[in-house]
Image 1 (tube, rainbow, N blue to C red):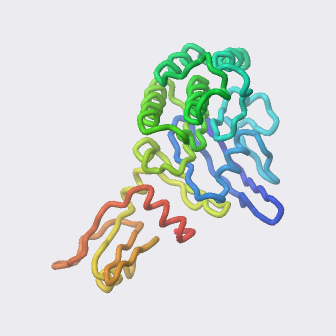
Image 2: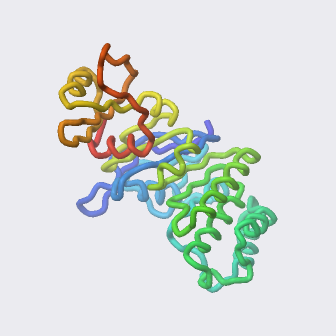
Length: 286
């Protein structure tokens, strides 16, 4: 089966367990949101998948192939991250040239076309680019690499609203023409909520939840009203969090929606993905 398989991965840093025996899969051809608070283990997992660091135990398989120090997966995966792993003294066009030589799957014509849409000056050296345009350069390289698995770790840092929207449009258009697995690790959950198909939430080194975004949004809702009435309604329900203001309460619930009691003053509203994430990770479980 085509997928990235995370199998019993554990990673410790001295007395801190960043990942605690986690196992799950990213299936081929889906767009994922990999979500977690700072320190949850998200970046550690990404670096293990990208073969930048090694786990203490467990393994990662890409299409059944072990990734650890294995050049067989060289053209199967690419991770665009905050880290600047490029030679800062080279020009953008020189980077394109070297990528074209190093990766048979690099589409240099696509890279120049994307650069033009962003008004990225390919004659500039990497170190001469603003922080935003350094991110644009890395995004351009990532999309132009026709690998089956593409990871974006906080991809839009430093980009203004127009450039962020352009990036999402370019990526989705490319995804329609060139289906693959795309993984977003980001704190800007609202921006990717309408893009991602599946959600993986990591908290305190463990997988807290994995489900489709559609299913999560269908089963999550909010009930608001006077505290006593809200408490009565929620008595037999899975409440993942609450907000209280004076005598009023807003409860966040996972489960099938029920009709409100007759003559009730309660209100039911939808719960967005960001609020769901916040309340789940506040509580630390479901």
